[in-house]
Image 1 (spheres, rainbow, N blue to C red):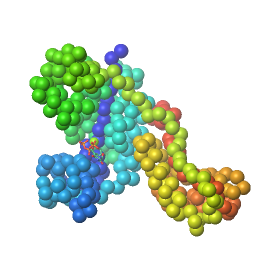
Image 2 (image 1 turned 30 degrees about the vertical axis):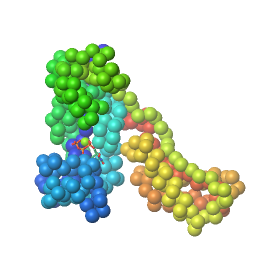
Image 3 (image 1 turned 90 degrees about the vertical axis):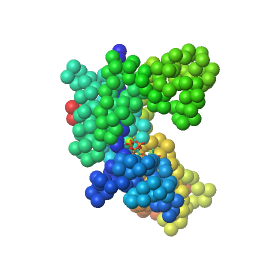
Image 4 (image 1 turned 60 degrees about the vertical axis):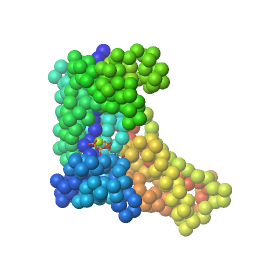
Length: 351
Ligand code: TTP
Ligand code: MG
């Protein structure tokens, strides 16, 4: 069966959130990042700034040279995570098969939920509309038969664009596509391909699989597939994880709050790294702590609706400790995550 895949990517995401919340930033070149004095780097910038050549990951000092009137504001990650969470709950109203790629980007497989009057294009339109209504930012969407083409399509008319590549259009669309649009083809590979006269996917089709492998190794197989518009990779919903936590057992018992601050600081940083690695910011439901006392009894305390900031953990730990007020053998910090199942039930109530 022909699959129906949507790729969604918010437009200048962090910058869009800042412009939404601070109207004075609209209509002027602005970016989100560290200051030039502190050798900061930009996370992203709005489209006004892009007109000057300013880009993500550019040192702020360099961006200021390209665009001296650039306004740079510091990132507010909690706002972006919150917006990401809302975006994902909107996606979940349409399908359970969601593969988030980052805070502002996801693949959706809507093959199973499409009906005659509910086409993938219509779903993409509804998602774009709802994100705009609920978050006051715009997302671009690509709709096609696989991940590769859906992703290229979402970028096609950015910002605030919707591009649909129907099954009958795939062949011509891909033939004309620059090889640089193939994910995995960076500047170095593109240069190498250009040296061989490979500029478009049509050029790549002229080469045999054998020759592509000989010149580009295993990646040659990908090139051979993508040049023909093929991409069998499934949309993989994020693994169901119920919680992420870190804990530490002490060689010597910790007497109580007076002694634990440096330990908690370290544990908290570990936890943040784990959440980051799991790309689980959007799914945080509760913060919790675990304490094991020197009598081997264990207690846990949790808090709902939290951003899991360090202060939350301090409060929870004090609450837990006061239950026994005795020396501690182990401290654990964690977050409980919203499960896929909960998303599914949200979906059934909304639809
Ligand atoms: P992107 O989707 O790559 O970029 P964007 O949303 O800002 O702009 P576009 O309209 O082209 O999609 O990344 C999403 C967010 O991730 C971006 O707003 C900021 C952050 N980010 C970084 O922090 N560092 C980076 O190098 C990049 C590329 C993004
Ligand atoms: Mg984006």
